[in-house]
Image (cartoon, rainbow, N blue to C red; front, top):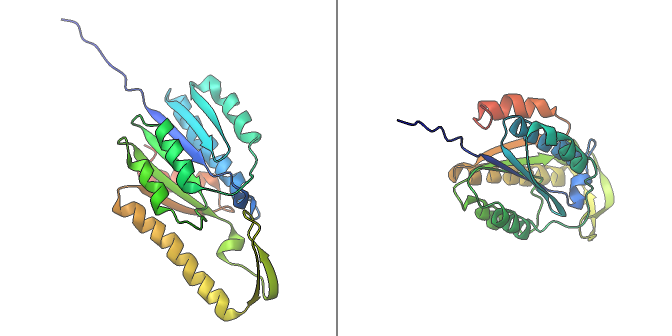
Amino acid sequence: LKLFHVEEDLRLSIFVDASQSMTDGSPSKLLFAKKLAAALAYVALVNMDRVTIETSNGRLPALRGKQQVWQLLEFLETLEARGAMDLHNSLRQFSQRNDTPGMKVVISDFLDKRGYEGALKWLRRGGSEIVVVQILSPQEVKPSIVGDVMLEDSEDGQLMEVSITSGLLRQYESNLKSLVGGLREYCRARGMASFFTQSSKPVDQLVLTAMRRGGVLR
């Protein structure tokens, strides 16, 4: 009698939003996203899982093994934000290229004028475990601007002249809560793990506490 042990070849696929809006905030959302991607990828590489990282303007081919961590870090170090985000098209291509079972992680601010529902539906194909991480800057969560200002969309350059009043700030806060809460409920209803964080928070707090408690890390 021969006994065979088949080791499951797990795969971690990470999508990092590297559109221009991710440069906003102090510290920037992109910096947090790169740190988070590096932490998750490192855990997978140590466990000999396959890791793929893609962005809205580039991709790193599949890596495996702890010795590949330097290639991973070099890719993330040189990653720069540019252009506008087409979340729907980006996640469609990401899902099609990573159609094997495993875990798919999407890290983004989800500030796409076309919404997130049509984009996230692509992730559900292939039977993968889906993890969604929304990052906003402290300045976006609690803006301090007042008076008459000219606002410019960081991605498409659209200008809008507005008068920032206390009433407008309350409406903004309500809309932001709807965006964050709506994304969380959308994910929960479809069996996706969802996390919200600010770019000023420690990355290890999200990874070692929230994700472990949520069953993403075991």
